Each structure stands twice: as structure tokens, then as C-alpha cells.
Image (cartoon, rainbow, N blue to C red; front, side, top):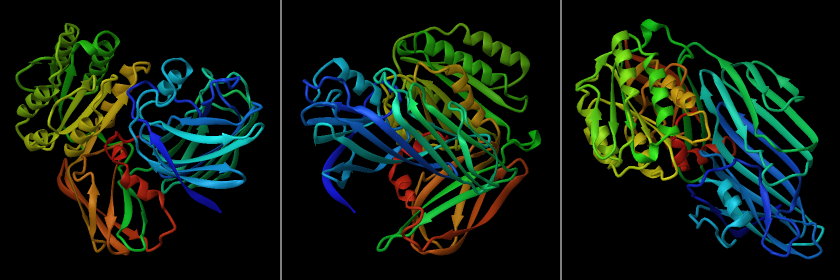
Length: 531
């Protein structure tokens, strides 16, 4: 049995870049002979349902000192993850910490500069820190962290990455490194691999289930572990998970997954606005890579599509007064125009979005606004929602450190879109182009959903995105009535109004699919791009 203990865990919200490293235990005592307690064992279990990954990280750290030591456990949660449980051992008893979100200073209680500042830097925006007291000399401190995240989904490929790179801090090998992946998929599994670490062992491999293990003694943890599995399906489908509560409404999560590829004649023509920040903070690599991504995206448009390019700084400049057809000559002219863009001062994203919306006259097309941004904005999300009369999806691509996360994510939630964050160290043009690819095959727009007898409420996001082949979106909410219920997903395709009908089972059980509760509680998961 474990005991609940009133230990506050601060989930740090920092703008610093994350190194995405494994968990570290840093001594508070300045006399401790090393920067960190020695990590001897790391065992990771990942339970995957569809694209929902429940990660359980068990670690052991050795106090190599002759005295007791207090220490801070740090772990860089993935950007879209939510910690659900933290256990630690003390005097042969297991305690469960009380998880609390807490914005903290860059160096809370650790002083300025040095290794403490480096650790705070690697933790990043969504990291956690846990203060553990009185670790006895020669004692092994055991900890277990549970968190939930969404896998990256792209054209049937479900990818997972575990933050394992600690070579900047840890120069010795672990005594034991172990990973176990347990996958349940409603779609057929056609391929899988751990691309970064060889010699894993397949325990079970069937149409819908997969179990693989990786064990490495004396392991140097100098690179992140990357795992994927590939599914195959050629029609609109849904993944549905629910869990009931004893006294309040149950929780559910619904993932809508269309076919991986669409025939050209089934793709709805697009009207795409490329809105590019050329403020001073986008100087150099950020601006050049954004321009390359836009150029690559233009090349993928068809002659059924329309587009325009706008830049914003302290004012808005439009390439054309209205969107133009994506002919070869127009694409070449736009590419030439992109090459002339230079930096200026100011960052009036709101004015840029409003100008794009002013140029959308109807919903005859699948309307999209792709924003290439430094992440800073004073725009009012509700004002944008009120101006968005033709259901344009607003997709913000962000590179920077001065990022207004809450505002950008609210804009996306209210306007049929998602936000994608990048660090400057990534291959920006390739990664940003992939965002365009995710929305390049719209097959259903003006999407609405109707549930049957389950009596759902508190649904997030409140507006369903258009449906894009090879992509995926999900909603969460609460339900009053357990049991079987219908679901109708309706919208407009190239032939007019159509609907897809499914049967869902809203569970009456309280002890299965408990991860669904965390999905609904994590608003950040709801507004980030589908992964």
C-alpha cells in the first residue's frame, strides 16, 4: 500500500529550451561531491491505446555520500504531456505526492547560474520538479512517475519519443535500462520499430496488439528513444474510450481518423492564406526556413486551389488584394515575391488574421490560415472567432521563446485549428511543411457531431475541425448516461452533404480507461496539433 503525502510538485512553465533529457536527481547540499545522485536503474513501461500513451517511469538513484542529502528530482515532460501520479519511497514505505501545477521562477531555491541553471533550462516549459528529503547515506532513492501524452500521428504512423538524452549531465552508464511497449490498436498494425535502439524483443505481434521489450545493461543514455507503429485503414473510423464515475458524469475521448490517402477527385478545393511574421524576432534562420516551407507548400497546391501571401510586422502587407488561382505562373510569381521579404519591426498578428478573414468571401472552399510566427500576439481570440464567418481553420506555426501559449491555443480552439511549436534547432522548413501536408487533403468541412442517448456535455473543443485525409483530431467531454449510443459525423464533401454513423459504448465501469480523465483535464492537449 502507498500513502498520500502532501508533497507539492511544481510543473514549471518556462520559456527556456528543453534538452528533453531523462530524470535527474540533483542534491541540494552544496557539499555533495557530485552534481547529481547516480542514476542506476531506469525502467519505462508505455501502455498505448490508439495514440494515447500512458508512460510509467521507474528510476533508482544512489546517494554516494557519507551523509543524508536532500535532492530535487527533475523530469522534462513532453510538451503535450500531463503528469498523473508520482510515487516515492521513504523508510521502506511508498508515498504518493499531490500533483499541483505551479509556475515558478527560473531557479527556484537553487541559486543563480551554474549547473542549477542548466537543469532549469533543460526542463523546459512543461517539466516537473519534486523536492525529496533525507536520503540516507548509501541509500537507493526509488521514484515512479506516471504521465499521459498523445503520440504523433501522421498518415497512419504513430510515433513516440522518450526523453533519454542526458549526456550533457551524466557521463557514466546506467546499470540497467529497460523499455516495455504494450500497444492496443483498433486498426490493423502493419509495421513497427524502435529506430534508435537495436536488439529489442517482440513478445506479441498480432493484427491489433503488440508487445515489445528492450533491455540494455551498462547503457549510456546519450540519445532519445524513438518508437513507432504503422496502421492501415482506408475509410473514416473512430477510436472511442470512456470511463464512468461513481457520483458525477463519466469522461470520454473520441478520436476521428479518416482514410490515410484520398483520391484527388474527393479532395475539397482549398483557399489557403500564408501569413508570415517578418518582425525582428524572426530574423535569419527562422524567416528563411519559414519562406522555404511556404515555397514547398505552394508547389503542392493544385489548379483547383487558391492562395495568397501576407506579411505582418507593425503593419500588414498583402501580395495580392484577393486570393489567386494556384497556376504555375502564379506560384512562380509568389516564390519570387517570397525571396524579396526582409525583416521589419513590430508584430501585429491580429491585423494579419483580420486581413485574411476579410479576403474570405464564402465557404465554397476549405479555408485555412497558416501563420508563421514568433509566438507573440496581443490579439483577442474571441474577436477573431466573431470575425471568422466562413469557418476558416487557423493553424499557428511558432518558433521562439516569447510565446503567448494561452492566447494562441485559445485562437486555435475557437477557430477549427491547432498550434505547432518548434525550437530553432529543428529542421524548420521540413517540419513546418509537414503541418501544411496535414491539412492538404480536406475531405469533409463544416463538420458537426450528434450523439445519441449518452447526453454528452462539456465537450472540448466546442468546434470540430474539418477532416483531412492522413490526419486526425479528437474531442473529449462528459456523459450522463452509460450504455450504447449512436454517433453521427456530418459535413460537406465534394458531392454535398454526407454523414458517417457509428455505435459507441459509454462505459458503466469506473476502473477501466482511467486515462480518459486526464485527457479532458489537460486543455493544452486539446489545442496542440494532432500528433
